[in-house]
Image 1 (tube, rainbow, N blue to C red):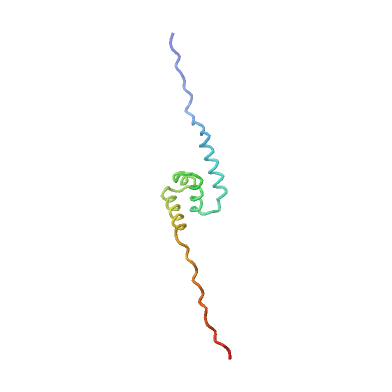
Image 2: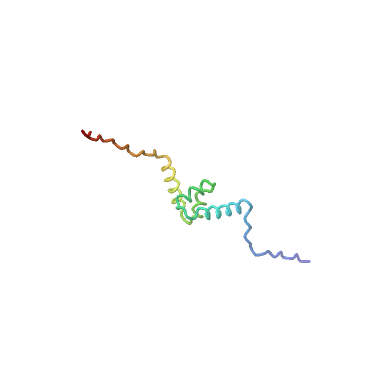
Length: 97
């Protein structure tokens, strides 16, 4: 008796695991919420939400070095000391006699 040849099903993509799907849904919600913000602000928020720089780049449709630059500029802006506006000089007025 000849052994039956096992016919394999066509390759199918595995459905995303729970955490991966959750991450994608979170990304969609975050991007929808921040859709009117600049790319730098989006990169900062996504990074704060726990996404890695390559993931942020994929979500924003840009490159990883661009995301790195956005995050660097944001950190640099926060670290820079804020300059106070110069005090107005009080001028003396002439006394009227």
